Image 1 (cartoon, rainbow, N blue to C red):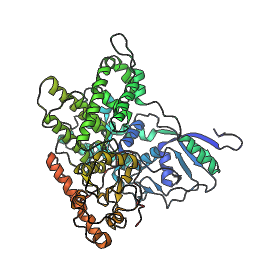
Image 2: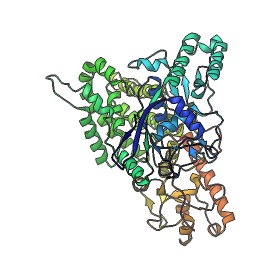
Image 3: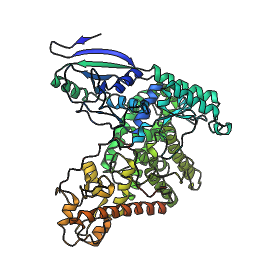
Image 4: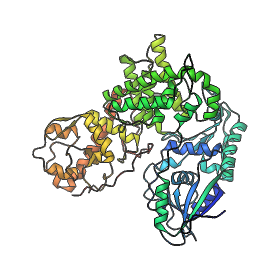
Length: 600
């Protein structure tokens, strides 16, 4: 029903449409993203969570469109991974609210639909390849949600070949391709299918269930009809200042509010606030409160990824009430001990930490083993750096994450309570896990890039006057300035302009300009200064000669790659198969990379 808001207000048209109709509108170019919207920033984990909601018919919220009879606001030709410049729709709906959700749905489900790819999309293009693994976790596991055993959404690790029961979602949204996927399962050798522990019929039923969920899913939309640009933009800005919805910690608190021998009351959200305050006082910066909740749940032997809160409250209210108070205390101490270990590795704040779940993992061990010996510290160091170099927490597999966190906790208990030796390996994170190649692009949204920066900071940074720059000061730079904490060496580089090799830690203070210009002002470059920044010594006239400057960056790139591989060898981590740079997954929410605006 159409509603009109005030005499001069917009016309409001609410309706409910099938997901596939929305996808058709995207393919036709009818739905566009207005130019004043922010860019696509969702992580891989966000994408998988969305499809999980669609699969189980959970609401994903209303989409808000702006419809105008005039060409009032400029729209982008790009829609996720697609170029819609050549489409000529009769009318356009500008997407005001729901861009991340609809872009995810279209980018994944319209893959291989014939839409031209956006030529400038070099930011983790493989994130759009989302698979449904029909095998799920058939063997279950302690505390594992029943629905996860029925199959999971995932991204395949780099270089991994899909198994017959791992099907791209865009194939499940096409009837013919669904039949092809099913045929591949029925043609697979029995020995291959034994890996799943399931019959062909069960795998087929799970694939078909997801296909039906996609085909029948409906999304509420609201068309906001006005030709008034100011009214539309004001409504959009008001929309983005909405209150914060109830969080998972508040929901869990409501379900497990009572504990203690005499009915002593506690509130998880308050305990999270306390932990966050202590973390902030330590100088580590702000940590996502959901990470603290997950640390609490792991310590209490609960699944940190279970989101069926009503069911969880019914099943675990009594056991959680008895476990949580003491578990939260252990986890809080484990988080603070984890921060100390991170600092020993040169990671001084949350902004530089590749993955927040790395801190949760350290907490899982250190909450049980607050005074780790040399063997335990070696295990944790190896685990920490391997998860960073392998982009391990960016693969979007909560079952695997929960398993390794539980393994760290359980192994620490064996060491402290049973006197067992520290394990030489972890079942859920083999030491030969493939690592990602050296990143070809400087982008702080990539945990692989942040891992490199942590190593460079750990390597040591010397000021032009020969004094060492404290690693904590480097971390502060990143906390304040984000991507701009690294100076561009040479904006004119034809081949390595976007490479990490074209960035160096800022040792020039507030003076503007690219590093190449500022380095010219420094007389007689010290050898220790140049070596700490992996610059060739002497620099000679390269700073004034563009032809030689490109070779300086190439040399620096090679030295960075060698530094990484030497460090991996020291930790007994398997180096990347190729010594050549490659694309790195964008697996963290962060600012998009800033354009290089430093001038000569």
